[in-house]
Length: 234
Image (cartoon, rainbow, N blue to C red; front, side, top):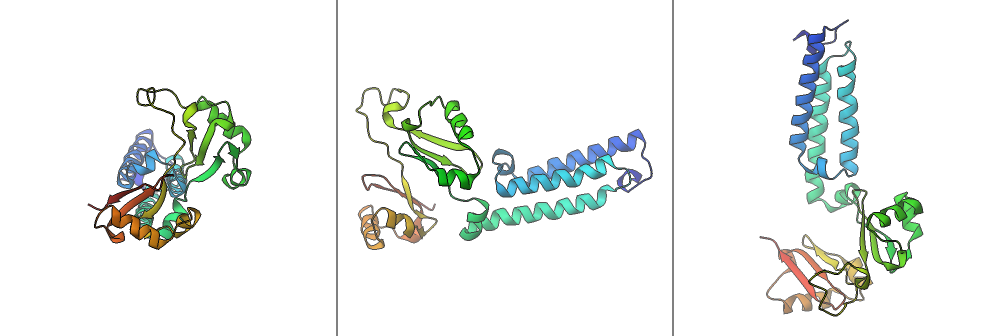
């Protein structure tokens, strides 16, 4: 185990052993953190990826540094990462820090330059993302959202969407983006206010869908025709 501690020099075999230990420890750490850290590089994931990569890189390239200290530090960081993820699932204020709400960049064919500045992206990048979606005209876009993971979700007006079997024989419907009004038992009063509704209206609307309480609701959305879809905890 001499390769594990700091040495004046290491043999080729010891360097190989360090690389093997470092590799499998990183694989184990990634497995413990879960698929989220791989598929969605969000704010917290980006921070932990930078830290882990930097910590393990030094003992793998400097024989004077031992692996033990780096592995202990990485273990603590993985535990903190998992604690942050689980706390953000249960504590909404913390979730808003780690996973902020999507930010509209284009609404009704108009660019929201203020939000472009907040997202720190340029017009050129926005146009590039539109070209990837085969969209050359901003005015064809009903809504474009800057997602927490750094991607842009683009929704075209129905008349500019590709023809599919489901819409080839039906009349074109106006663009309809559902708004979230209840999430995890919490009513979004800000969204209700934007829609010109209040809590009393919402309660009456929920009653018409069945004997449902707000505490039973995992997610509730409303469309442009005031139709509510409710998803309950199971």
